[in-house]
Image 1 (tube, chains in turn cyan, orange):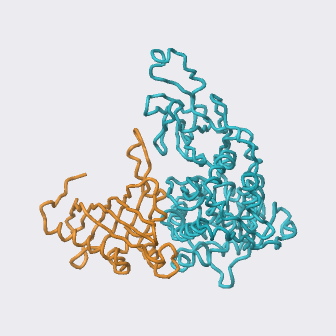
Image 2 (cartoon, rainbow over the protein chains, first blue to last red):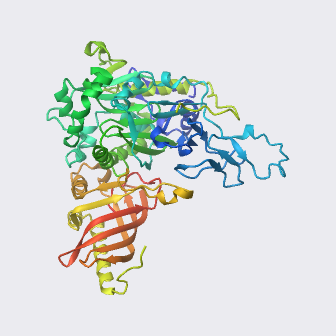
Image 3 (spheres, rainbow over the protein chains, first blue to last red):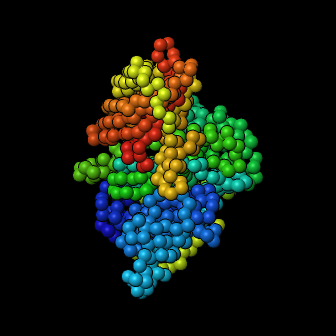
Length: 443
Length: 175
């Protein structure tokens, strides 16, 4: 089966074998072929304002430390002493010139260099190669407009090539105002007993579930946006820029429709920022597209209006650790930022009135991939199959990528196709050579 | 932290303890409308996040008010949370979790001349949902109780959960 992952997905029928969620062997291979290869989101540069600021996170199942190095660049290293493998940093974040291993005291600088080994002279007789025993750096680290990404594969394409046209669309968040975005302080972290692909699948293209999954929140004062009475709401599209990335967006014909889609508490701000956004991004990205939900391959998800950005850390075939942040325009007034944080906390996160109902659905979906009989019946991903929009450029000449209707599983099919392609590629990721110098991201 | 001011007022201590015990009963019995009546209209209901910090940052382990929190509610949003549960479509709580709120270590830390109390209590909550989903939440609450009709209204509740990564699928119950 190992060389036939593409067969788990039948694009003609739009069906997906449920083993991709439950098989422990597949999960182990994902750690190698997806998570050790792809560019993974570490955080935002606003989390590291000062020299020697650091935070810890995960790349796949590997714990890493992300630091603002003395030269101003951002470094990222395995959080692992090169002696016994102990974690050298037990804090979530802070400011430190060095990391001293709590086991035997090997000490590493914020640039990863091994700077002190107790007994270096007396015990090791100065024979230990200090240069070769620094913290293991990632192969590549880079930023896209403040978002910090890294990869452990030296053969990975550049971040720019990896994100492709998704980067151009991410500008709708990252570049709609002068100064870009910042992450508000505070991280939600919680465990979900489901496979990491369920939430990614949900955020990349499932604009279908809202009226059922989230009705209880909508009718109780936790609206995501004002609703239209007829049908499933506003017009929109699923946009498939390739590379396994994707997002869903509403379509606003004009300024009035942009404002109609704003919740009352955000209307004044939307009015104050819209012209700047149109000037910066043009009328497709600044006016017509009002994006809702997105995923960046493999494990990042976003909600534009919800101001939520999420990483789904894989912990096992049936265990995912969700990390959530709230992002806002840096140039926005403080009362708007506060209101956005409340919006996010009350809807999307540990106690989120939207989130909780999603999570229980993913948990239950996962359970079905564990029964022998249930597993014989594939998932259905046929929505919108053969019903793609033939000429997206006729809708707007600037549109990049493929386009499906707002309720379409085009993005899920694209995600699993890209997943299968990587899983079928047997080239081992080229992890960094021991002792390689760290490549800092531009400051 | 000052020593409990009216520590010798056993009658007050008993009444506060009885108040918090009755509140816990309402939560466990899913009598959430009656539970909401225990809170003032100017309520702040807040649960910060907890981070692992070391060295000089150790005091920052409880996130500051205004940062992204687990709960950051006023009376209106807390009321809406309760309303959501009664729609029959709040899937995360359909059926409802079985909970047992155990409240202990109750201390009246301060009593103002107008009768407003600062009360600290510990909680241990067992939650069981559907078949196997089960969790124990422990933590501490700091309540501000304002006198009201021979009893009190809770006008501020700060809840510190003893977890960094929340190990349960959601914080879909009340604390």
